[in-house]
Image (cartoon, rainbow, N blue to C red):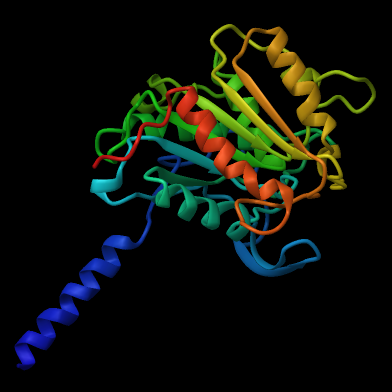
Length: 305
């Protein structure tokens, strides 16, 4: 009897371990283009007036990917790299990272949280998106694509989803794939860093601060830019990157004029930081709209039966 109980406990432990996300380093050694910061990586609980108590991470000097894989029988082959927001100062790890990964996993997708470097480094231009996270994002796409077969991912259905500053990071990566922002360091960097689609939620840094156009650093939208979905709330008051709805509106116009398949949803109310939580607020419907858009763009297939 004791042997049977021990076997059950070991089996349960094995299943629990299998359910744990896989964590992999983004870079094999020194992080390129990083001057570094003092202090160790830390996490803290933050009381947000919009979403309550949630976990934030900062002082990231060792970027990683945290991979949530669906059960094989539910796997659609689609994957999304998740870019949490935080103004490039912190990462809203729980609200815009873990919760998003769990939602994607429930839909048969692989959710991959990108822990990119933050906070801003000395020398970063004030009120402009720093370069370091953009290097991390390009590397992330190439790394995921290079491990696609191993992780049960279709290499032609790897997308990005970002929130607030992370929304900017996802869109900037989708439009900035023509030139790698760092010197290649290994064979992974020979693999394309172009995501197959991108989603930006309540994104900042997309609109120029002094004129009604997209920011200069994102103005070039090359041929081959993948489909992009944008979602925002009209009453967004967030100050990071001037993250009001005009960021998504002007980005939509620029993408449309460039011939990029794009879709925009601006909800009348909902403010900032709505993540993927389901509640009475209007933006909570964006997740279902997103799934329909992905199927329409043929980047999400039905789960295997």
